[in-house]
Amino acid sequence: MNRESNMINDEQAVEIFKALSNQIRVNILQMLKEPDNNFSPQAHVIKEKGFDGGVCVSDIRSKVGLSQSTTSQYLSILLQSGLVEMKRIGQWTYYRRNEETVKQFEKYIGLKI
Amino acid sequence: MNRESNMINDEQAVEIFKALSNQIRVNILQMLKEPDNNFSPQAHVIKEKGFDGGVCVSDIRSKVGLSQSTTSQYLSILLQSGLVEMKRIGQWTYYRRNEETVKQFEKYIGLKI
DNA sequence: TAGAGATATCGCAAATTATCAATATCCTTT
DNA sequence: AAAGGATATTGATAATTTGCGATATCTCTA
Image 1 (tube, each protein chain N blue to C red):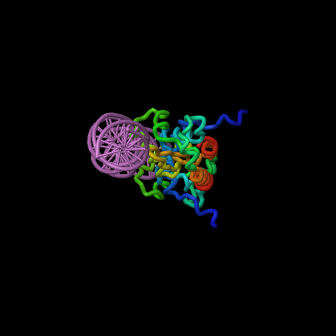
Image 2: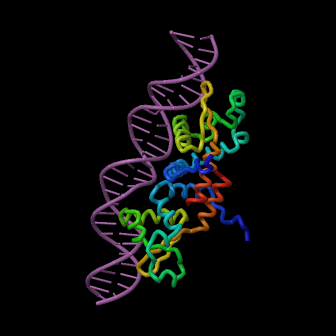
Image 3: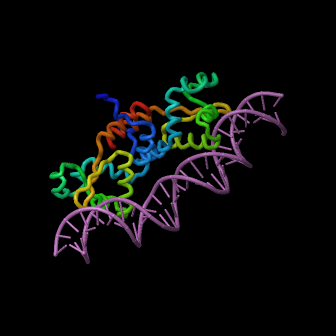
């Protein structure tokens, strides 16, 4: 398996830069780095469904202090960039960091920037 | 001397992300990584004045294909973010990468993102 | 199956960004 | 001092982003 296959390209990198060009979205990504320190324990469902570290939208919303619609949209932007991943469980949507993308992004910075 | 004194903060980081949230500005920064490969040799003045790697605005402009005013403004955005530094020599303004900021930015990504 | 809760999407106004042409400023050289 | 070249700044307009309330969708439960 080609170890370089996940290397992000310039276009993807610019999309990530756009996602991070907003302080609140950076805050969300940073908070998701340590979910246990920043959010109350998520419903048991998470562990059962194997999406550890995922946090539901309403919990994120109460932390960032924006409207529900804006919070949802910001999470969508982070999702599009690949920095986070999402799983719907019941009526909740859980978001967590996509550490693979973050790692590839760091690698891109080191090599291409 | 405190080795952490140059660590950039969240606010500076977001300004850098904004600067890089545009493909052309990323291209400029990338081209400045290897000035000798991307630009014709800059006037002797450079070496004499000790601003190695600096490239004048008009040479950058002809590479990116934007208007002179837009090119100048983009360079100003990169300068504000700290990713490049600038030196006026005679009637020319030379820009080059600020490797110290780039290094601190990489460090920020690794630690905070 | 009707209602309630969680999230996504839509439509909108305000703010910011992209990009240019025109003009101003700053050097250098007659 | 004037002219010319290099760069910066100043409008101006189009496009994008921000952030909200309203509404739609999905899922669970009574």
